[in-house]
Length: 279
Image (cartoon, rainbow, N blue to C red; front, side):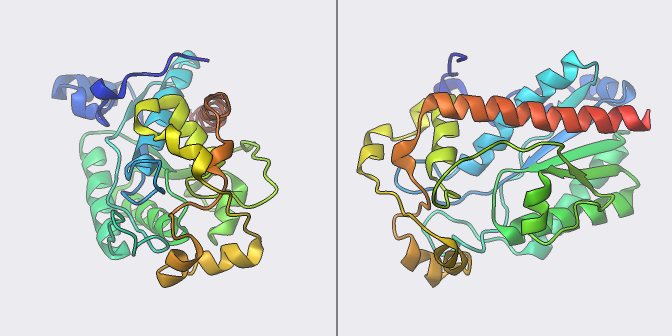
């Protein structure tokens, strides 16, 4: 397992174009580097994880993806993460910022047009947040941004993910991964539970209140509970008063590292295959 990075020196701009000079960025565009973009939110993640979890995770994922792509001969740059996303489910919790989908789409379109202005031609987006409306909004932003700019843009994810949120995996703006990260759990574990906590713990241990984990009881939700929770608002507050859905006490840094590594390989494989197909 790799040594976790110190969060004291961590910045969400790390390894992104925000830390590049404009001549360096222009050269990357001239060298036909593809752009990687993570889109998350600021929202509550229980009593044990930070509000920025859904921004930290795709940021780390794309840093790993970029390294794997480089080993495959694919040049890439990383956009600073998008974090003012849509919180339909957890919007009433303290710390969950609510942004209208139409506002998010307009900002995405302007940013995609900026990439095209700078001579980039290809964009791959990943989501750090499971909210269905947030992800349908990403898709709408990708589609409009691509149509209005002429830039080739794709929303990357597992086929089951797109089916869950009502998006056809065969859409030309979707890049479905060929495999998925396996997550075995008797009950639903979808928010600040075992899997998300494990990933954060592996990469950003200083941001996880691991001393609380043994005190957090598993929610043990079935499909009816999950459906009720996904209605959001007062439903989510009532079903998960502590803000998590799953079993954070079962988390481990080893599991988190394994899942992060697998996810990065899967995403990089899909992107590399797409790039090779259009060359």
